[in-house]
Amino acid sequence: MGGVLGLALGCLLVVWGLLLPFGKRAAAVIPDGEALLREHFDVRELPFGAHVVRAERRLDGTQYVTLRSSSAPPTDVVETAEDVAPKGVSDEDVPSVDGGGSDTSGSEMGQYDKTVWGAVHVGPHAEPLEVLFAHHPEDSAQSVIQRNFRSLEYKDLENIGGDGETVPIDAGEMEWGPFDVRWVHLRAFHKDDDRATFYDLLRVNLTLDRTCWIVHLRWADRVPGTLADARIVLDAIRPMLVESSVEPATN
Image (cartoon, rainbow, N blue to C red; front, side):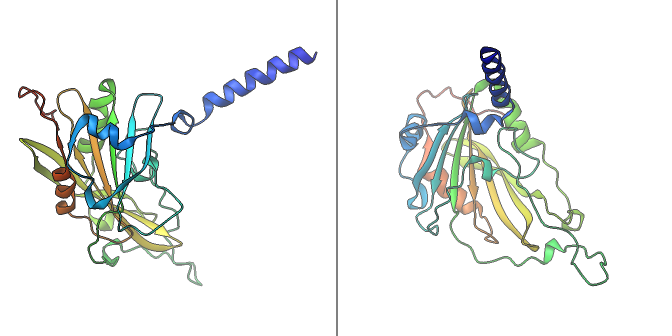
């Protein structure tokens, strides 16, 4: 009887493990994230005086290296790859941002009060809090690029729901060494204890040939992201030109 119960419990634990979120049970620490970057890029220096706060590899082969700016406030909570992706526009192994909150004002009459996202105050410029480098396997590269750079829905701020949403606000191409690479600037509107706010994200497709890399910049609450900060990152970490025949991937 005990053997049967033990076998049943073992099977239950296996099934439970399979039902856990893939990313949460598959992360393995990479001991030297900066060394990984130097294997793939001509690293002049880490941008913004940043240091590596996390480097990990997922079971599907995706690798993440997260840099935190030296000007970022000290924190015991290290932001991970899961926290960088905006709602509804990234791949399945990077969960979406939960806007939280409600779109009502809580007035005595319970009257509906639409959130005016365009009225959210934009603060002064500051360096990005974090820079995340994501290296995706070749077999998932095209779908990742599709979700991060092509399957984006532009909309007017008045059409954003009361709980918030992440929307692209600009996109284009910029020089990276001899290549022109695609970038997209997003703004993640959300509620923080019923207070309307946002944070900015900017991602750049650094994929060359069959090697898929995407860099994500994230700024603090209400700090406007800038393309100039992305250029600082690309100037500091440049393409490693081993062969002149290397072609950039279609963005």
